[in-house]
Image 1: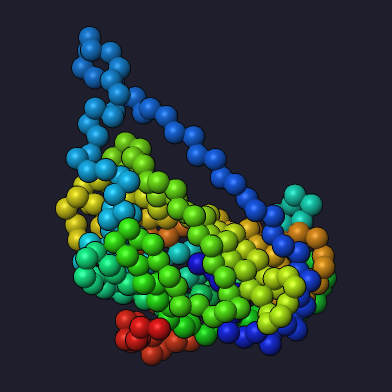
Image 2 (image 1 turned 120 degrees about the vertical axis):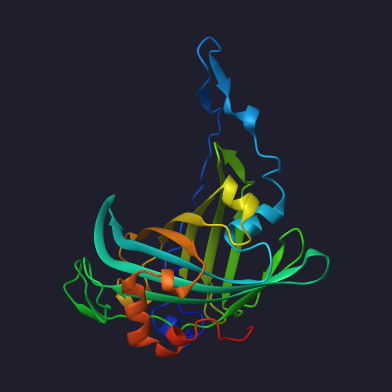
Length: 293
């Protein structure tokens, strides 16, 4: 969810086209039986005996977990921290505060579209103040922080959730989704997203990033709510951002964050609302008043 500025190709080009490609990461998921204790004398029983009345593999449940069961406006609020990773050592660099406003709209035969306006803030460590200039702890130089202005992105999907995004040619996104599964009363859905930014006619990407997302929701919410509550855990492994001026230095960035799905802007953290009101007042006043991209 913390993506580079794909439209500002001239900025990316200045950063050089020799960024080291990020090695692909593989996540292994180990599944097992969850045990619960029954009444005295009955010993242990498998929790699978009380499995939900619907199949986790049904794509409509993932869609409901991430968004909603019908036309709706939803919000994902995500807070985290970005680290520098060098020689197996993590150095905290700044906080991340992301809010994604999404509109899901259903069409014929189960098709749907999702248009999202994502607003990303970098803030000072231990503070909610927006980071404007950053002191590089590796080089001792101060760099101006660069983040793109928010732009809506639309994904058009069929009933099986095979989607196409309207992204610039310079940006490629490859996403792999694991089959959702039940763990107790919670549905889990994992995905891995590989992002590359490549300047025109470049031999190699200027920036690469791999995101690991884990969404979870409660069975009762999923069964009975149109917009069920949900949460996520996010990890990102990426190259140094071009504006950091780290050139060909070893290492890269690691991001760890958590988030919640919200129904209204009033549920956003106070720090997020304040940042929106200060820096994007139009979005703060009407967060869903954007057209399909």
